[in-house]
Amino acid sequence: MTTTLDRPATTPVAPVSHHRTTSIDGVEIFFREAGPADAPTVLLLHGFPTSSHMFRNLIPALADRYHVIAPDYPGFGQSAMPDRSTFAYTFDRFAELVDGLLTQLGATRYAMYVMDYGAPVGWRLALKHPEQITGLIVQNGNAYDEGLREFWDPIKAYWADDSQAHRQALYSLVPPEITKFHYTDGVADLSRISPDNWIHDQALLDRPGNADIQMDIFYDYRTNLPLYPSVQAYFREHRPPTLIVWGKNDKIFPAEGAHPYKRDLPDAELHLLDTGHFALEDKADEMIPLIRDFLERNLKRKHPV
Image (cartoon, rainbow, N blue to C red; front, side, top):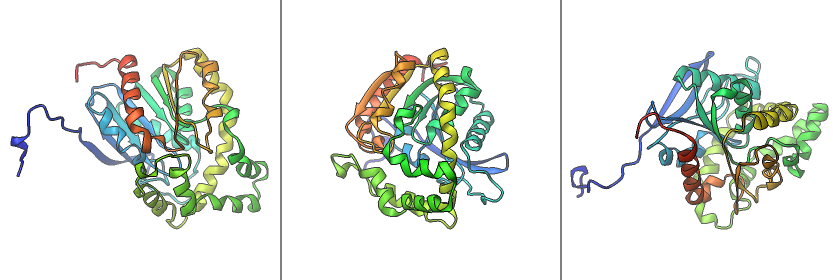
């Protein structure tokens, strides 16, 4: 049997990921953390219907050189799921809690990986603290009207009148077959996608009361569109280094939402990948080298790692 002592000295050892829970404004927030505390920070902001679980493979691939933080929003993953009667499930509130977590961890400058719901959370952080953002990695996360196409029509109908009928229609977005669709649609080689993904996410979606929470969040997504001009102005004024790695077959956030970033960030590096919504699941072998190269060129470490 091979032991640690028998392992060749050159064998790389994967960085350890820590799984932590802390209280922010009285809400229990779960987060994954890895890497040296004094290295440049990379914040990973997850999408729907998942959690920081989506970054489980990316975190150790970055943590040899960077301090990586990946929180779960309330109602997602392992964070608390407060009652809707006492907690507002809004993107404003999510951003406040992530901001509070970063403050608690002493992360005053950080690059952001934003995906899906992570984009509106991240844009709020950037508008509040533009001086803190050291770079952007955008993966199927929207900041332009062009990016909200046919998939969003039933959700836009709900925004228009907040009717019970339109709300009820959106419950069709949380059953198992749709959760699986998020992972498999637009993917050429399904053997690259672990079924654990949708089983994990569905178990959390199926918690009593969680579907109602998701409907509240669908409705609050309307508040992101009025922010787009301010977000685009932030891009133009601050010109954060930006890497766009986008699954071009995504029906939720299609490639039409990727191209407009170049209007306001002409130096952004744009890569359209032949995959769907959760690009990291089958294209990590392409994305991780791009991400590491981007971070190496744009984030300066305080000390060699």
